[in-house]
Image (cartoon, rainbow, N blue to C red; front, side, top):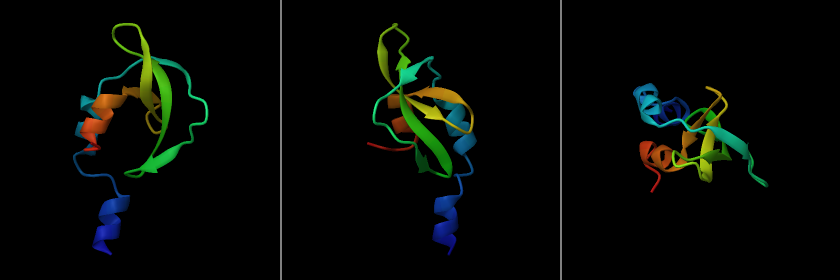
Length: 80
């Protein structure tokens, strides 16, 4: 039961992790992408603008209404 609760609840330091992921400007939705849930949060892959002005994949958080850099997001959640 404890494992299930730890899986469903965000990690205690997740807020700190989220604040370390760079924000990027939203450009447009990506075709054929469906929202998904991870660590108790709802996410969606979108197209955002990188710092150099080129479009790239980003991750939209429904909880915070913000877009995050995809590579930094993967690193923050240990998705390699």
